[in-house]
Length: 120
Image (cartoon, rainbow, N blue to C red; front, side, top):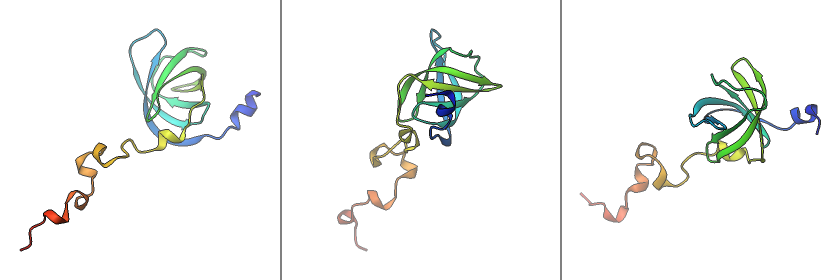
């Protein structure tokens, strides 16, 4: 694929937070994910990166993904993934089971067993 062909690959515009760590450095940096595709993403944040630098990014529901910095423009930079991912996974909710959901988002009546209710 040419560089122009890469730009035509479908990308999902979204807003997620992710952690980035540069190869050889232990510290993590928080970045905003502005768009995401199977082959890469655009990140925004105050991270000192150079073009060609290897890094890892922790994407929601996917985990740590290896990548290389493809371009830099001010506080935004593009990351080309080493291996393709399924970008739809990052859009899915974090908790899919009721037992994994925080108490404040669970349906109130779903937890009540009607057989245990007392008649007044």
